Length: 186
Image (cartoon, rainbow, N blue to C red; front, side, top):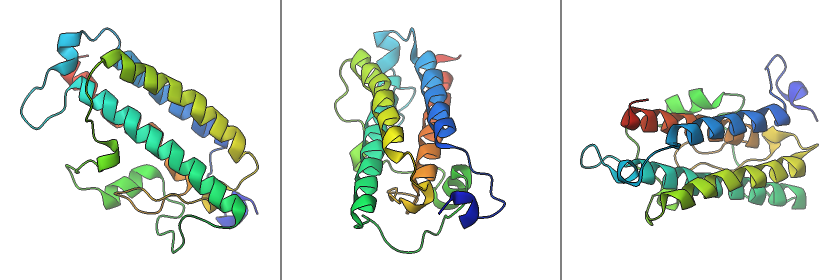
């Protein structure tokens, strides 16, 4: 079954376009943190706000968890044992609309994606770069799969299909890039 027969009239981006959009968002994020000094990386503008180091660690952890979850969901789908079942309440919605419907203005970060190690800023940048390779291999594994049939829930938004999950990676990188740019004044 093809996505355009599932939801006629809905513009669906191709898998390679979704992966490319994540790569572009990753490049924008990495450009935003390029040249940040160790002192700038740990600066907190006020209590309760994250430093650039914490934002970068969060992005790396969140992306690793999300990509791993998509792999897990794909494996379950292929075995005929999906990791989630129920009503995909966000079916066909772009990720921006899903987030607008499901997130509060200041969300509490899920524990799996919370910054907790700190440490070497360069490590988190390297981890973030390396995730693109894993994502591209996932794209190969997804070849021929209807993305809307593979569901991996998000801790805040609930059931998201792989298309929405890939859109989320792009959205999330850009969201936190804007925070980094506000901290650096770029």
